[in-house]
Length: 410
Image (cartoon, rainbow, N blue to C red; front, side, top):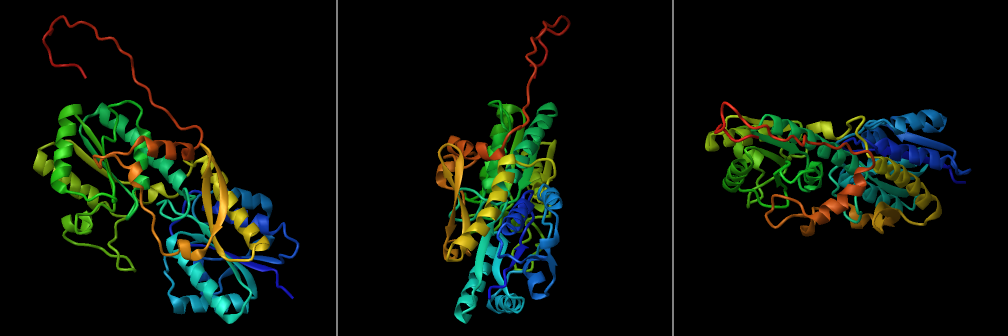
């Protein structure tokens, strides 16, 4: 007899809407009469092999809705990147607990974990349905128009740069904002949606999809500063030179690496500081400031796209429906239809797992330091309703009396 047990877990970096997907799985699964238990694994795959489960069947619908509207991973997450041996342990735990449906909410690495576990269950003849539920602020999953978590993070980035631009216009200088994105520049590119007037910043946008030249960067900053009297710059943490070496490693004296051997780009202000130092030293501009958005953009409460919330809930619901009514494992994908509406498909896991999407050429300007209107049209519907706006005085200048030949206004 089927056990009716399902397990859901969350992996990778938290987002503002990942709990919407969790609630979507739990609430939708509880609608099916043959589902006897809905378990949640604490701290992702690490919680699975440690058998750290909680029974979400007993959670009230009201509290699930409150948690759904709360950013970050309610079950906790992990940065573990399972290999075949690790996935074997995952499978053995799932089989021991008679889990028949496994839902993993996460990004690239999570989809690969789901693929390996699914293949292991199939080889063992165990009836396990494995569904990957997409999540990542980087928007770098292949096969989807966009990924839940990205629109809310993009909304934060757009609003943050709109504010930085206002600050920079009041006290002119150079401002450098470093945004997450090791290989894909979607989130950094979102800074362009903070612009309203032609001379608004960011004036320069640097993405990992294009080779970064420090000499050209300094020339761009110099030209922009001379034109506007100021310069706002958006930089992806993953910018690199022609050899593929991260700029952060080239400029830094010491390099920190994560558990996977990757250069630690997030959670450090090194790149912003290094670029600011280069501008001060080489261009002689005194007022130069830099920020690293770091973890702020992932789970910033109160800055969430309503479109993102809705779709994050629906990918969780659709995952359950695909699992219960379908006959295969897979990864849920968002497909855009019309100007803006979406549908959902279940893609084969091998089409998504271990692959990385980068920004399409049509989204990046010929100069390589801006985005195109095609990108603005792509992103704007995702940011949701109620985006704040900025305005300027329409002040009429008053004629000078004592200093008619004084310095230019503005």
